[in-house]
Length: 34
Image 1 (cartoon, one colour):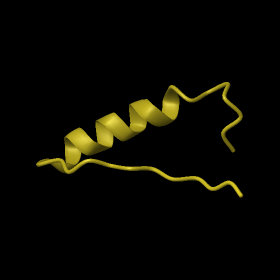
Image 2 (cartoon, rainbow, N blue to C red):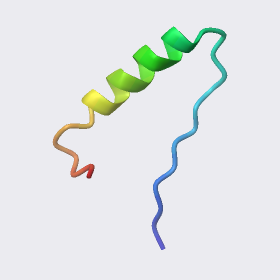
Image 3 (cartoon, rainbow, N blue to C red):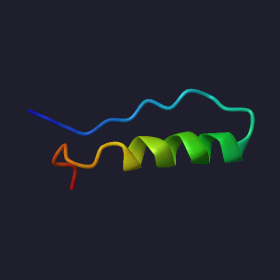
């Protein structure tokens, strides 16, 4: 069985979380993420 999972550490500010998450999403291009 396979599943998608994301573990997000606690961030004090939403903006920092948003920036890190956006970078992670953009950097996965080419790894068959749908």
